Image (cartoon, rainbow, N blue to C red; front, side, top):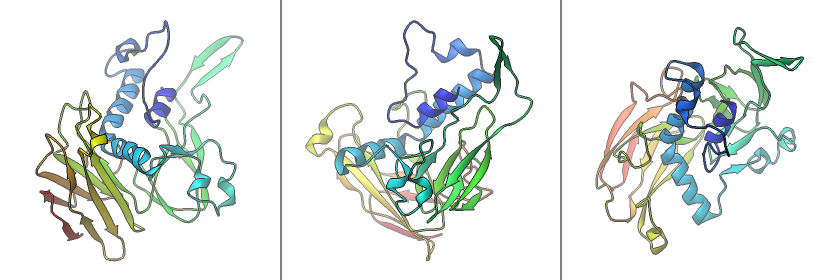
Length: 277
């Protein structure tokens, strides 16, 4: 379960092995702990595909990085210079994997599993930014260490202030549904930018220029979001769509489920939109 949580925040998520059962149905059924944890992170990975696919484009086109040490983003914070158990995944999400067993003890070659007491993991939040707990949307000032409760279904995730994070639909495979209705989460506290990238998904035509990008820009002082004009095109491209904008706070935009109450719903057809939220 912990390995799969970590795998969700790597460039390629694949439950891989040799001569070992690894399909989700090998780990019980819905309603049982192991199955539910695995399903939760598979679904989260699919919901994050707009963010992950756009990050892949940034890696390809702009020498970006999928995973990187915190010192690359916060070089003036001495506390992150040798921090080896936290990392950035893409531009906005800081991941702190659970690396030690918390709910299984070993003694005399015997393993005992117990979930009666919720354990915690310490996470350092770099100075120079505010941070949001992905699971609770709690906003925390940077430059300090926090203790995050880590029940078996939680990996600590923190989102940098100013982040613009797109969420896709709940699907069983990546192209099951079009991205015609995306949830766009905005984490206030700093200006932010994000470029949504799209192409045909299954070929190399992007190398011939067949792709499209949409730039999002958040002005924190003015509480204004600008959705730029779409650049580029490709066969099968969506002509119009809905962006459900969510200003993240304690009541909205927390966790891995779709937000029930959006801040504003925007109809987008490729032309620049500027809206004060």
